[in-house]
Image (cartoon, rainbow over all chains, first blue to last red; front, top):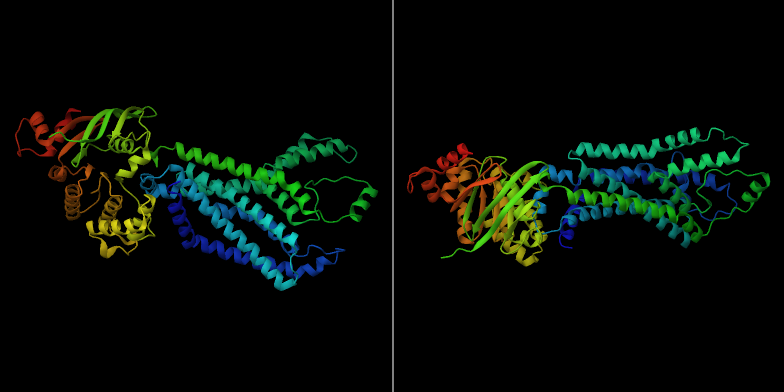
Amino acid sequence: MQGIKPIYKKELSDHFSSYRFLILFALIAMVSMITAYMVGMSISKELKDIAKPKFVFLMLFTSSGAWFSLVQFVAFFGPLIGLILGFDTINRERNEGTLSKLLSQPIYRDAVINAKFLAGLTVVAIMMASIVLLISALGLIMIGVIPGQEECVRIFIYLIVSIMYLAFWLEVAILFSILFRSVATSALAGLAMWIFFSFFISLGASAIANSLTVDANDNNSDALVLRTKIETTINLLSPMELYTDSTTIIINPMRKTTRTLVQMGMMEQLSMSRFSGPLPLSQSILVVMPYFIFLIAITVVFFAFSYVAFMRQEIRSL
Amino acid sequence: MELKTVIETKELTKIYNTQIAVDRLTFKVYESEIFGFLGPNGAGKTTTLLMILGLTEPTTGTVQVLDVNPVREPLKVKRFIGYLPENMGFYRDLNAWESLRFVAELNGLPRQVAEERIVDALRCVDMLKDANKKIEAYSRGMRQRLGIAEVLVKNPKIAFLDEPTLGLDPDATNRMMGLIKELSKEKHMTVLLSSHLLHQAQKICDRVGIMINGRMVAQGAMDQLAEEKLGVGKETYTLEEIYMKYFQEA
């Protein structure tokens, strides 16, 4: 497709030479160092509880140390990276009058939006990869454990899922930058969506679930199960929930299910803790596959939205 | 001698929601002439240019640009039309070289050809010595000239210049008009020039079209229009007089 390559090249060089990128890069370096440091300090303490420490290296990413683990951090604040990279993609060009000039060149209109998304995706991928590599490297130095083959694969899958997650938020930001003329409005719209999906949806989910199943208590297990089902279903609308559920399972082989409610008797509990071996990689993948596919699907849907919105916009108003 | 038609529109109409922006426009532009596209603000000049470029679809009517229909083959049309939009913007972080190279890449020019054309375009607009300065630091006049250079890099058969003299000082305006005249003669480029500076337009345009409220109220050589409207002969009228006459009638 003509036009994608030059625009992609230009967008990438714009990203790399912008202050925005510098700030994000500083943020990332900080996060990686702090996470690695916190985990490094606490990992020996955590290892005490595990009979046969098999996946020590992965604990670099999941162990929360003093405040948070990397997985949690990316789930909460990763969206910001996507939003910051994309919130002024189209409307900046529109406001500066460069868009009509760009479109009067012999390129297809969708080349502009495709190339911009690809450039953002590349930056996001570079950032995530550098975080993961930095933490791995620092971890290697601090705890001196070499990752096994399976651990490497798990980290790689985690990386891919994380990039998809950030790509979703990048796409949200691009959509808003097409819909809103003002750069400030599109940035705020993105932030509002982030806050809604990250914090408020879980509150709303439990409120709705509670009001729908008032008779749930310890003796009425059917209602209790229903309550949890409603709550998880609503929660799953949030990309953050999808991401957290899928990545914790991929990166933590000791977790076997994404379900939160487990009701069981004494003996079951005993046998559960007794035979708590790690899940094989293929089984972990099987558990998270639906989540991963859904994450990709909503990204594609948002991309389609912005594609249609951009193609249908009158050039006169550009 | 029969002149070759470069642009031809028939009953071209554009309606935005309920507002008629361009109303049954029919006109022709001939090869290597400078066609002055005149009219008050909001008369539908820019909309017409966008329709000819294939950037906006006409509601009804047809356009032909060198036997190509811009609605069907916008890419082809955009390849041989250079468009200088009104209030055009630039990527401020780039310098003139980079900006022109970007345009060349978008047009798919091979590197060698691109370099030659860029040097040529910069020489034409007399900007070779400023080519390494960032666009941020450019004056209004320099930006407009860079805009012309961006059009030249494409080596187009037709150039649409929408208010190329907007906000320029008198001296810069004069030079800009001179440059346009020169380019049309040297490169045999057809130029569609939209401007409010009638005195300047009179000097360089071969023919003019006057558009008011979406309709083309007059088109033709200035002498002919003067005779029809004012009843005076050669060289004793100004374009302003003709324009005002039409404007008052409409």
